[in-house]
Length: 129
Image (cartoon, rainbow, N blue to C red):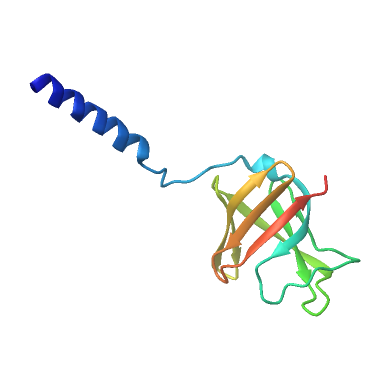
């Protein structure tokens, strides 16, 4: 009887341990993101796909060149280069003393999604090179 109870306790503890989720989420290397990416989708209510001058994000070792987007056309009309830190799951930038996180929500070698923590919008970026 005791042997059966011990067996059930061990089985239950293995099941419960394997059912726990990873609270920290997935982490990435910042080098995964180096290069040029085109905006392919956004959850922003203002998002319009641009047929001619699709917004591009450029990620280097130390800077993000974030596109400035014309809301009416959805096209890029410039960019803002800003230094960033990468913590394994988010790009962290500082605008006028305010910290802004762009949290990676999914990644593959050809596409990634990030969500900014102020507006809560998700943008999808497709690799150009």
